[in-house]
Image 1 (cartoon, rainbow over the protein chains, first blue to last red):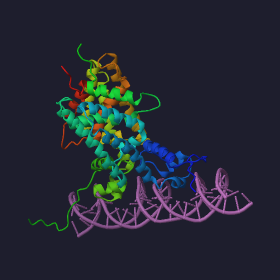
Image 2 (cartoon, rainbow over the protein chains, first blue to last red):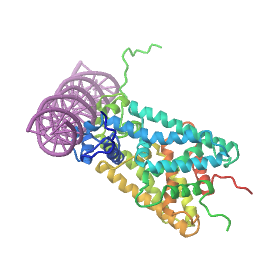
Image 3 (tube, rainbow over the protein chains, first blue to last red):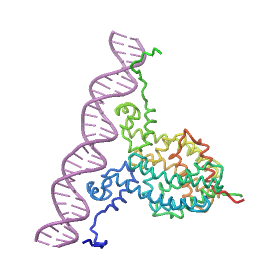
Length: 201
Length: 201
DNA sequence: TTGTTTACCGAACATTCGGTCAGTTGACAA
DNA sequence: TTGTCAACTGACCGAATGTTCGGTAAACAA
């Protein structure tokens, strides 16, 4: 008979979740290809072989991490796809939410942003990521067509540079000390939407 | 016709320079750690061992490539360090020149931007790179102190987001088709200095 | 108590890695 | 015709890689 009780006394040790989160940390420090199972074992405080008790292997670890990032980003796309209102305003909201996801799932998104397509797993992730990129690209184009953003810059360039600033957050943001996701989004939107330079005299 | 070469006489061959430029291309495609000497050999059309005739090894290839990027960036720092004029204007010029260097030395700078410090070579490169970062950081702080850029955003955040947009260029720019370095710099400066949003006027 | 399950270790596996080295090839000079 | 030499090949090395497997101690269940 199945005991429906989920909460039982935990024996100390790892589970697939803790292995994943520690592994992703190491992947981001040394790069996925630069990380050996020995490195992971050291970070986990166990032997290499113990890792295989919890997870099927190195590449599965990658796949699970990338899914976490992609699920968040594509949920955003699904939400906003049929949203009403001027495209500029939707773009602003999408930037805000993207920053939020980036910060909430920082290590997973960081890993995603560094994927180069070296394996089937990585290629599949890149394919899903392209869906996000296409959505953003369309949104910026729409905002330009509506006259919501300046017309003297190619929308394709706007997309890349704007989200270049967003994704750069993964390279330097430290959640512990420093700004919150909202602070970040505020700063980013002020700079890119209103401009840095002080006006008039 | 009458070309007598039944057997191809291809005694041309590689030199350290061509090996480096092809190698850096592969490094950027697959990542440095994800690239084996066998991969390089295939891209060069020779055997693995032939590579060692031209260059001392894999890590030296990395070191030379990173130096190319860093030499360009630190030359810029040396030039601008004692430049006169308002800090905003100097910042604008530094962004412009940074984009120029990024485009001119695209593969080398791309490689530099992905270094994570896994070896002594990489750590040395990161150390030199920090000098560039510190210079930019000081310049932005100065511009803020002079009132040249808006005061309601932390200068440290401005630095990161502004140069996040700049360095993102390495992730998507394709020299063949598309904008020139000046086009890129124009677009980037318009967005970040003047702002994207159209103003009711 | 005994048996089962959980979480791990240590040794070994096949493969790939960066790198070495003795020898071969073809273009060219004399 | 012979010799030189830059440019390369192919066989090989030890170390490191991701993964498998037999075994085991401790916690838990009976």
